[in-house]
Image (tube, rainbow, N blue to C red):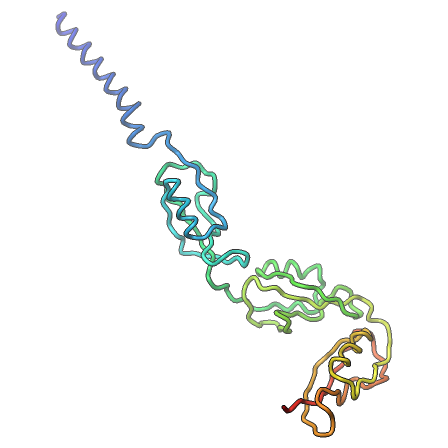
Length: 246
């Protein structure tokens, strides 16, 4: 019985030792227990830079099929990552990254004309557009959009523009209730006529170029409204100008 008892105690001791070794040594080694890394912050880095950072951290990566667009970042720069930056994960964890698209998506221009300036910012931001320069001109409406421009050209509602585009605005200054006489522009050079229009608190309207042999090229042939007509400040003045046929 003594021998049996000794053998039984030996078996129990060996079992306890093996259990201890399994739980404290083998299992942690097998599962990398206690070995974690911090996920690097990849936002703004290029694809190649981000992959290199993940490799050095011992992490895998997978590019998401979805993409976004940010005008301030380079093409294929990293926009988003899962898990988030500084998350503690096990070595070998897969990090999913979203890249900046090569070409911006196209949007349809909203109608901002006759909209108050305080509402324009929200409209543009919600569509992914930026507010550009604001030019104040004499007009009876105060802080109301009179014209919307993209790259210096008037754009109408529905015109397709890239996401992130800067939209410049022509806005009324509220001083359009003053009455003044339209200056006589006939015979003036085109540039001088435009300066006089702007200096008279008026705005340059449409310009039409006509063929003529009797007037030197670049000279104003006709205007509308006519000279001396009483108008409000901010009125549009259309010009007919002799064309240079050279």
